[in-house]
Every structure is written in C-alpha cells, then in structure tokens.
Length: 202
Image (cartoon, rainbow, N blue to C red; front, side, top):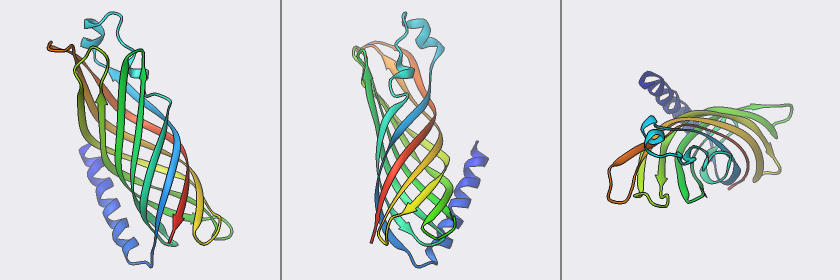
C-alpha cells in the first residue's frame, strides 16, 4: 500500500507540474451525489455489544455534498475538494469529512465541448462518531483513489459533469461507554461515490 501511495503521489506531482505550464482558468464548483462506504466493525465490538449497533450502515448510501476550487486548461485540471457526509440512525451518529487534492486528464469527444476525464486523488479523511451513550471520538487518516467521468461545457464559463470516484482509506473510531473502557472500533476501509457536478470558470 505504501508503494502504491508513493506512485500515486509521484504521478500527481508530475501531472500538476505539467498543468502549471499551460494557460489556465480558475474554476469553482458544487457536487452532489451518493456515497457507498465500506465500514467494518471490529470483532470485539460485536462481542461486547449484543445486539451490535448498526454503525456500518449509518453513512452507507448517504447523500454527499461537496465544494471545489481549482484550475483547468485544454489538457486537464487540478482542484481541491471538501466533502461532508453525515447521518444518524437509532441514536448512532457518524460523520465523514474529506479534504482531497485531485488531477484529471481530458479526452475530447468530437468537438471540444464534451470530454471524458480520469485522474487520481490524494488527501485526508476525518471520521467522527458521536453516538448516544458513547464517548465521542474522531480520527484523521490518509485517502488515495481514482476518478473518471464525463464533462459537458455549456458555454465559455459554465460546465456540468457526472462522475464516479473510488477512495481507499483507513480512518477508524473507537467506541467506549461514558467513562468506561474501549469496547471496539469502527473502520472506514473505502468509499465509492457517484456524483453530479456544476462548475463555473473565470
């Protein structure tokens, strides 16, 4: 995993350097989609809490909004994204926040207004749990992934897109009753997100 992360980091650095040599436009954007999270409960949590809380489902298939800002040219784009994923169920509450740096390459289809894109992402994921009856806990860890999609330019300044991104991470939070020992943990292994986006460049 460490070797793979180093390769992604190197590829992203080289792509950003190449993009910096082109004339670029700054853009801002909004995204909305659904995140499917692979969350695993530890064996100790399942053993210590019967019935075990359904924390692996709280932010699975959850609506996700994001904000992004970056620069783009005819070859590709690089951008910073903040995303928030939060939900609760039967007193169980989880929140996931992503801070991600991404680079995409463009592949025009026909005219230059419709483009396929694909690229890589590196960043941080913060996972928090604030479930009823448990001490609050949070953890920040790395994220690395890939994304692809279709971008449609509406005019000189506006564009819309549809995409999918897959992230690997290892953020983990502990569960302990108020003033008590640790009962187990919840681990966020990966996230897959299908999304729609709207961008404005200037």
